[in-house]
Amino acid sequence: MNQTYTLITGATSGFGEAIARKFAATGRNIIVTGRRQDRLESLQRELGALHSNVECVISCFDVRNEGEVENALCKLPSQVTCGINILINNAGLAVGRGPIDVGISEDWDRMIDTNVKGLLYVSKAVIPYLKNHPNSQIVNIASIAGKEVYPGGNVYCASKHAVDALSRAMRIDLLPYGIKVTNIAPGAADTEFSTVRFKGDTQAAKSIYQGYIPLYAEDVADAVSYVCSRPAHVTINDIVIMPTAQASATNLLKK
Ligand code: NDP
Ligand code: 8X3
Image (cartoon, rainbow, N blue to C red):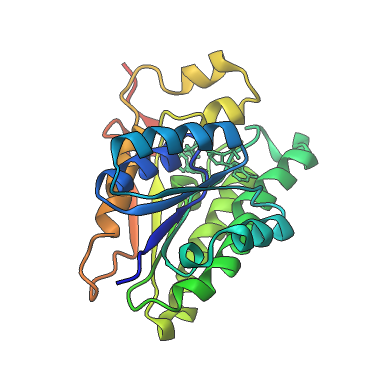
């Protein structure tokens, strides 16, 4: 039988990196993507040494650039691209957290271009390969910010509401091809997310995760692994996964 591959966007840190580790550990071939080539290479080296039975292919591109996405996929060997049967749309970010009336247009563009348009560009490029497999799947990493809105969350929340809507829309449009679509909405998780959101202010980022136990990237990777290992006739449509100390986006029990 031909080999199958899982393509993971945003695998250079956080959830995507943990998903790559989890999938490699369960014997799945992976294509890890992101903009930081050095991190992709070091992950490839690490996983190659740990799992000789698994192929880890790297593909470096910016999801915001449709041409770059298409070229990067075209450059991969055809047996790799033709083998893609799972797509994990994980790459994403928040930039800034403040009232909409003083929002920065450049930050809004980065969030919408990455979280919404980037997800669309990658999906458009990969869906033709998914159609060739009998039991394909797309997993979109949305957020609790796609289920609720909170002060200062405005455009990030809008972008994740769009991801939530796209998950539901994809499930309908891709039904004729038997492609499963799963939406995963995590709450607060300690990754590089807040450092990016607060533009490198590590103190501000650290304070987000103090006084309670947040989710870790591995918790989300577990959920992704679960939804991708259900029998062919079962689709998990939506998972909201929160730290136990978090009841809603803004309701946190801090000690
Ligand atoms: P990280 O900052 O740790 O990881 C983000 C990943 O996205 C990186 O690998 C980064 O790679 C990639 N990425 C960002 N922009 C681009 C781009 N333009 N092109 C290609 N890749 C890009 O954050 P998380 O792991 O926490 O975030 C992963 C996803 O989870 C995001 O969609 C985020 O919105 C979502 N999320 C996060 C939560 C949290 O609290 N941490 C909670 C709920 C959802 P590189 O910089 O190398 O390009
Ligand atoms: C990240 C979680 O609550 O900061 O998507 O929006 S939150």
